[in-house]
Length: 302
Length: 256
Image (cartoon, each protein chain N blue to C red):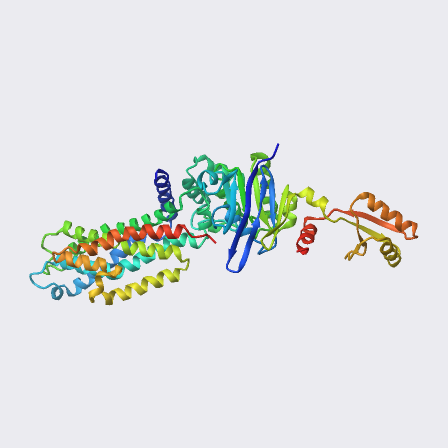
């Protein structure tokens, strides 16, 4: 049974003068996933998100949310909560008053306001003016604003901008809760790869406006190059032996040899090769590539 | 259409929440009272010379107040109010939030426009009340210069309302400028420039073509018994047309 894609784009393209910010992008965000939309600054992430929300019109291509084209904005956007780069708040008003403005525009019941405050943990600060909030509290207020509607899809563009590590962790936990407890699909763009790695089920990697990889995070990790870190007594001899036998070595910064090896079986073969050539092996570890490694592998290829 | 009206109602309510703890409401009282106060001081000081025998003191007070109000205060006051309303969104980059909501963007623009109209409209009865209060105070403090005559409250209100209706075009233009450009300096600069020009244009034959002199031209002629229909239509209906076109233009733009 095909999983429904909550977000789908087809050939999405946007230029700004001579610069092509987004080029022929085909996004597929499955329902119920936490999709990490990754890319360096200037890759086209924010432009893409603004096109998903109808804030920017694409030069070419289509956007479909919940299987419907974005042209029918109102019923679709009722189910979307968005946080775009910075929280959109009125500093002279309290947290509660800020939420009331959006609640009033959305015409949702008054109870949603307290629910949103409870989800982000701002109940005690709700009656203080937003200008007195810390950065973390403002971010949480921005998220509460995104959660006021009957949200099935949450689109977050750099939600951890300017947050300290505690704030980043809070946001991460909140995202997990929203997906798990409320069944929301979360589309999250960030340049903090380590953070995204901890929450995302799927990733899409963009670079210079093009999509380089899209799919399950686990698939990405198995697809790309893995390495074995080997600690030996005679480094020069080991390099000679491995080079002759056709193993690929890459530079490493931790004193060990870094050899390309795709599986545990290959790691064992490597060990056997070295020891049979008289090289003593005292450390052997199959490296699980981090999202950061994978990201650079993919983007450096382009 | 029904959705638009619903969204517009919600947006107007949201706008009134946003203006809490801002100067918007206070300005609507301060601006007209400032004009009246100036006129009061001038007449208190120089009343005997300024009000010629045979002239109605109340009409003099009203006419001078309205002239100052129409020519100088209205453009600047409108500029400030519209810049304040638009600035609420510009300063916090709230357009990206507002325009991503399932709410008609035209309703959001329309609400800003209506609230601006409402705030300027509110200053009209304040001006009227101020003129009457100033006249009564002058009756008390400067007997003999003419304020013992009976108050013409409906005439004063009539001309004040005429002035307001003619200023709709000014309100529409400045709403658009304030929304379109995020810089407060642009909005204020435009306001100051058109006001300074208005002082000069009023003396010329082009004063019926220049939006910022329309209230003064129409009110002055009406006081002299002549209703200038074309100028009135430009100020009022023209204002509605410009407001609609401006709203359509603004809401079609990308939110970058």
